[in-house]
Image (tube, rainbow, N blue to C red; front, side):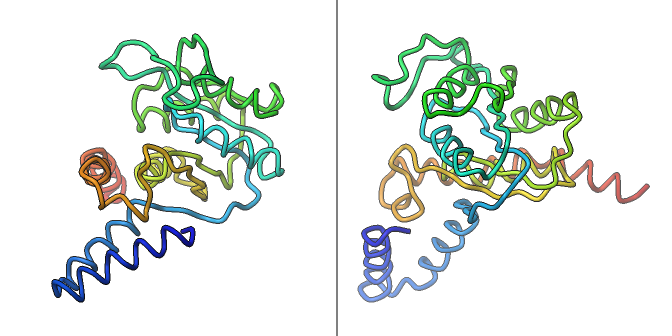
Length: 226
């Protein structure tokens, strides 16, 4: 949390407590923030995963970590939003990443290339159309390469962090994950609750964290009973 964001966050909480007496509201906001906005210090890993998207910042973060020597490989994943039916291009920095691109994966690979990542270090997965598929299709790619992944880094949107961690942990149960996200959509752990758009994104993530894992819980329950 940067100094400016920390000051704004504290000011907002103080207002709730001092002017309204809403200590419980502050506790709820803190709990949601801690749950959704997962972030770890990077450490040496076997691979960096990028779970799709049209924001170059997540691939730029992955490239930075690769250039610093945190992992030898990067695996971007993603086709495009099935509701749209095509990849519409970069959401930010479109003047740099002009395309055209056939998939999120192709776009993310271009971001990595422009950031200085060697072609041989970048793997490819361009079929996934949601976060669960990002994780499991990436697992298929890793298995096809005979890779043993003891520790991995996930570079994703900050408010997408918990769902990504849950999905990739489901696909790679033997792997330790570190989440190193990038802020996008002007939605951060410091400000998500201060706008209707930010609140909608974060609360939507809470719902999807639940709905995506009904199948996982059923699988784990059946496995434990064998």
